Image (tube, rainbow, N blue to C red; front, top):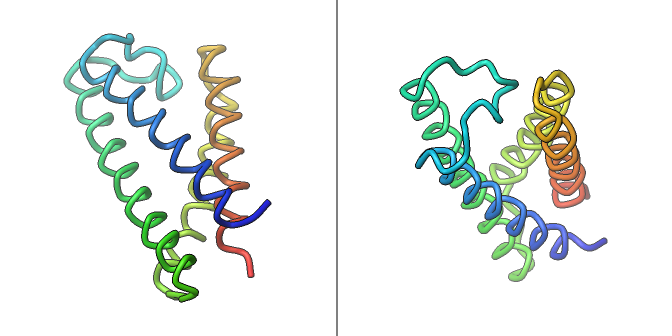
Length: 126
């Protein structure tokens, strides 16, 4: 798989996750389906989901810069460091999802975070 293909798949995955987070924030989806069922109130959910959406937007910006650099044949060490951080983040998130109480979060969350970790690794490897 090429880095460009991995980036496009990541844009798609993160876009879907962002929509999912927005649906949770607007209470279209119950918040007990996320964070291993450990959220205790709507206010707590809104705080966590807001942070999550900002972080997802940040990941999208970094990956977009990487995409533009890739097309231009350029490299940026800071962007590479951020993407290595994303590999670590998604790997740790995968481990966390293995402890989810909700079966959907367990299966789908684990699959998405593991896939994201692998794709980010493909994007950043030499």
